[in-house]
Length: 106
Image (cartoon, rainbow, N blue to C red; front, side, top):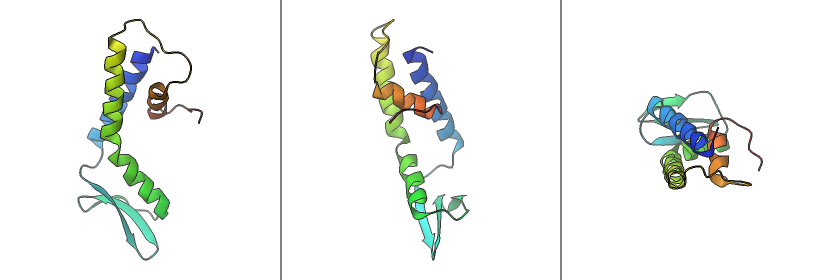
C-alpha cells in the first residue's frame, strides 16, 4: 500500500468503528471494586475491568476525532505531492498502521 492508501484505510476503519460504536460521552464508572465504561447510561463494557483499563478505554474513545483530523490533514498533505512516498520514521504512517492492527515499533 502507498502512504496515501494506508492513511485512507486507517481513516475508513476509524470512521467505521465510530459509526458502529455506542454514541455519546463515554465515562468510567465504579461501584466498590468493579469498574466499567458506559455512554448515555448504556453500559458498553460490563465485565469487571481494572480502573486503568477503564480509564484508557474512555481516553482513547475521546481521541477519535483528533486522530481523524490528524490523518485527514496528512492525507491532504500527501495529495499535494502526487507520487511522494515518505521514508524512514513517520508518525502519521505509524498511527495509521496501528489503527489498521499492525505492530508498530515504539
